[in-house]
Image (cartoon, rainbow, N blue to C red; front, side, top):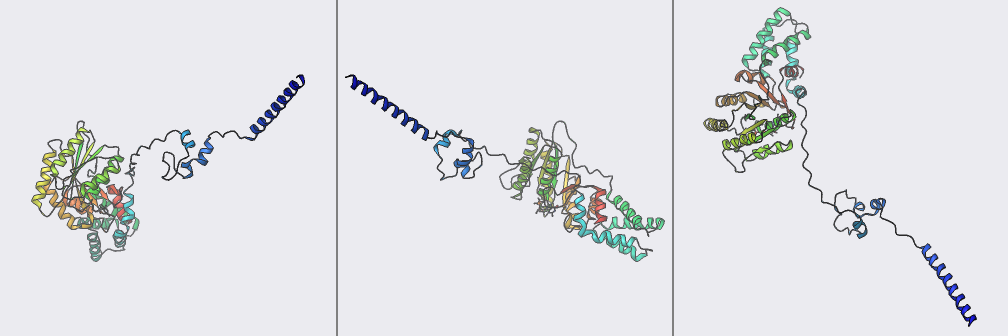
Length: 396
Ligand code: GDP
């Protein structure tokens, strides 16, 4: 009995030792479960395997690995990003671009004039040629004759041989014609209790809507709160075009979605909204159908009357296409009979236009050119500066 007990104890002890050895062996051969690490996230997660960005959901068909997803925080759908607004170019120095753009059309003007004026002796034929060059530059008859007279007088006294002196003389006389004393400010006087109102008029196609869009950007660059009124309800796409310009710089547009809506009521709504929203400037686009002068007069007159129930119009800008030359002058006359034009925007000076048209138009209307359009780009509108303009003419 004692022997069998001893044998049993020995067997149990051996079994216990073997069992411990087996357990120890098995435990050693097993790898512990790898914890979920950020490195693994980068290498193995379904989203990074597919090259998706943070915030994006895995592509369809990618069966996400349950382990990974349960250990990741739930992905919130990204809020739709607000469209980034354009940052308009600074206004200063824009007219410098005119120099390059006038090069083609005015090369003959400056080079030809300077060559003629620098001759040893200027006889009648040469003076006639000078006058012709000025007329070809669209200066207009009266200003051209005035300039020739002034130059004749000065050449008589100062001579003509020194090209530098001649250039300075021409510059001075041209500047007098462009008239640096006129008020060319395009920012209306601010009012304490209401926005300033700018009404923009001109024949369809001259670049009116584009100009308002560009001017809105200029005003935004000058830190003004602007609101647009799409009262050109005649041309179906005009309101959409205007709103698109505004959207790019965060400027709201009041418009009617009904084709042919009453332009005066759109203008009224725009001014009311501008007052409610306490903006600095409300700019109103209008339609310009010249075929019927009485209709035009009625329409613009009604807009003016209705708007002025809310606020006086501070500025009426007439937009003219510089490439239309004398035709533009005729349009300008009609508009100035209908509304009280306070400033001119001369568009398309980047094209084939001759620079002299600036002088001719100002003379004809007695109203200053305040802004010039230098291309179709959003920032191709420059405040008009007589000195920079004359320099551009002479160096073109
Ligand atoms: P609206 O009918 O008077 O409103 O004329 P739009 O604003 O629709 O412009 C008519 C066309 O003239 C468009 O193709 C404009 O891009 C273009 N335009 C406007 N201003 C300028 C400018 O200064 N230079 C050039 N080259 N094109 C311009």
